[in-house]
Picture 1 (tube, rainbow, N blue to C red):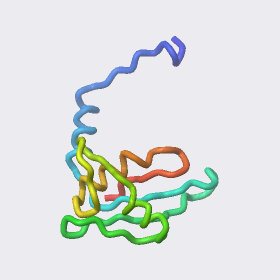
Picture 2 (cartoon, rainbow, N blue to C red):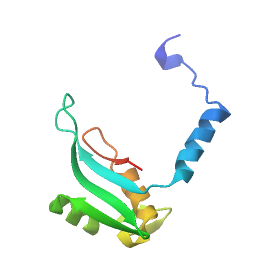
Picture 3 (cartoon, helix red, strand yellow):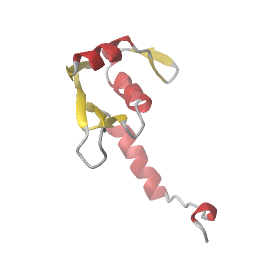
Picture 4 (cartoon, rainbow, N blue to C red):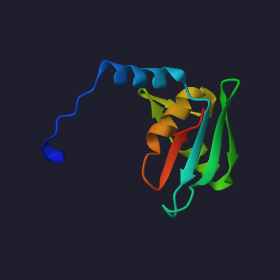
Length: 105
């Protein structure tokens, strides 16, 4: 059967793994930029969850954009003061092959 016509099967074990990842929480998030697929991505910003508030390290221009941009999680606007909800919203917003947010811890 061609790839196009293939039916994907999901076991409860795999769904459990996804649920586990969701419940693990996010403590550290990196915003990365891929300039050349043959090289390692450039880490633009690291977002750390410290005492329930997100702290940023890295490119000041990107940090300023993160602070200005409106992010929403579960229908509510979130800010760095919202901690993990903010990290989840950023991770969901930055998902393309060249500029993305990835969970580190």
